[in-house]
Amino acid sequence: MPAYKPALIWGIFFFALLLSGAVPAQNIKERLFHDAIAAREAANEKDAVHLAPASYTRAAKAYRNGERKFSEARSLERVQKDLDNAIKYFRQAELVAEIARQKLGTMLKARADAQTVDANQYSVREWKRAESLYSSALSANESGRGKNAKRRAADAIELYRQAELTAIKTIYLAETGLLIAKAGKQGVKRYAPQTLAKAKDLLKRAEIELTGNRYDTDLPRSLARQAKYEAQHAIYLAGYLQQAKRTGRSTESLILEWEAPLQQIAAAADINAGFDAGFGPPVQAMIAYIGNHRSSSHELGQQVADRDAEIIVLHGEITELQERLGGAASEQQNLQRRLMAQENLRRKVKQLESTFERQEAEVFRDANEIYIRLVGLSFASGSADIHAENFRLLTKVEDAIQVFPNSRVIIEGHTDSYGADETNLSLSEQRAASVRQYLLVQMEMSPEQVEAVGYGETRPVANNETLQGRARNRRIDVRIVPESDQVTDLAAVTFSGARSEP
Image 1 (cartoon, rainbow, N blue to C red):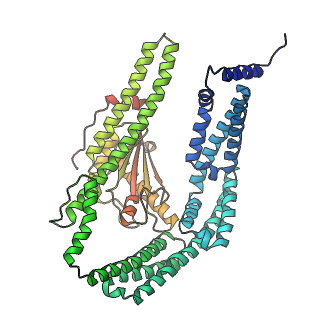
Image 2 (cartoon, rainbow, N blue to C red; image 1 turned 45 degrees about the vertical axis):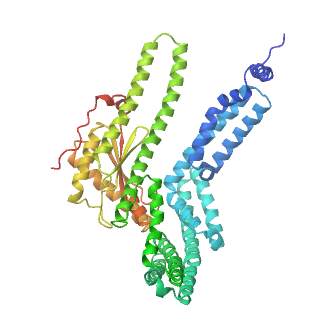
Image 3 (cartoon, rainbow, N blue to C red; image 1 turned 180 degrees about the vertical axis):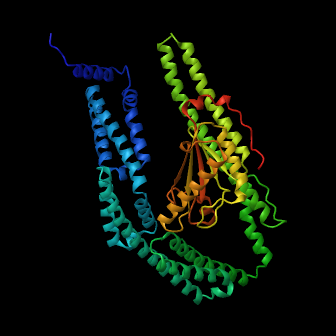
């Protein structure tokens, strides 16, 4: 009798299963490809296809080979070998992409800023040269040549900024100038003088900023966009008011017309909007409604993630318990403790949320890590000094940290996009360090427990093009990382609430 190789036996068995229909091919494929698909999705989340092209290409090729061999009913051993390679290279690509984000973040931001204003269309030459250096920098980073990557990234940043400046001048300054000239011919100044004057002032400021500081394009770009918007706004307002005058409409009818959309928005939020005291009360009610729903969205998102994780754990535990009757009681107790820990963690975070007022901080969770976003912590412009008016808020932060004793605490500093990248990075680091030093002085924590890190303008949570968005981006995040065994023992921690101010 001939001696068949194991791979051949697997192939015959697998092919027989498919032909017999005993096990659907789709079910087998889902189980076999599950880990490789998960690795690919993790790499995609890090944008590894662009930031780690070589590793990602190798991974994708191995994955396609696995799919091809599976469709041809090859041996499971050969399919699994390709999938193992795919997993290996997808994970490698994910790691390389994360390193690129950390070390080449300024280049990535410069490229994104240039893309925002369509620099590839308005400054073709600089864009092509920058793209070549961009690819070279990523390639050098992927092959471990860090110094080479940084040098090429610096050259790419310079070219991206040049391309962005050219685009800004073409799209916004030139077009806005034409719009303002058009407004002058149409007599807009008579009907919308304030808006037109604002457009002119913003355009002038944008030109000054572009000339005076070519290394900070965020501010002039924002000013130029606002100038263009206000010019268009003035033309619209003038046309609207001219039409109202021609048709003999009263001021009252115009105000009632503009109240109607606010009433519709309020109705969608189930708010009864009354304007007998002006626009203020209904607008504040709608802002509060949006804020509450943002907080609920954070909480619901985390609950869904928790439930998904629990389902995975439960499936695994059930399978193990069915296979091993011995020790089943112990396994069940461990599972129950983990589920209780998750519920206790949710309860603690809920208690922290009630401690801070909405204008002071937002509290949310990412897996087992707790974030306290200090929206109410303010610094003077360009300063990292903590003032007395912030002591009450920071005292609440101390209480929050004590809910999770022996945890690691990471103070993260962030800025908006106005100002040079390097200046913003330095300022965010200094502010995070100030908060760290304050907590170390006030609390009995070892310096090793508390870390300070600055991210500058690289991690916005809101739109930098609006005043409110920039205010949200200028923030300190306090990140609490409990020890892994502490998460299980959360039920033993008692939250005392905020202390009175010393």
